Image 1 (cartoon, rainbow, N blue to C red):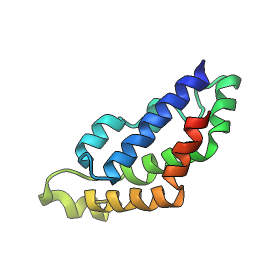
Image 2: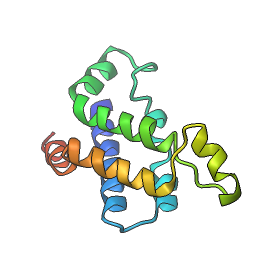
Image 3: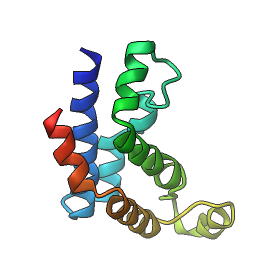
Image 4: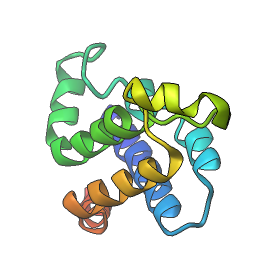
Length: 122
């Protein structure tokens, strides 16, 4: 039951990344829809029982993809006003344009289309 739920939600989240990269939605729309997916679904396994941990482990590559989307992009993107931008950039944040480019690179590295094909086969 959990594995089916997880696969469904991962497909949905992966399609959201794909939609952003295909420019079918804005970064703001993506962030609202994606809703910190990696944390929301507790994909690090910190709340999981053994069965759930096994399901997360079986989906390792796509889970790692979403971990990187979360930690390397979403957690770092700054979309606030431009007058404070430099201060946030100096503190390690990234712009919306940089976030898009990082997601594009991650999608290529993890071969997002291949990930989706595998998910549909589960």
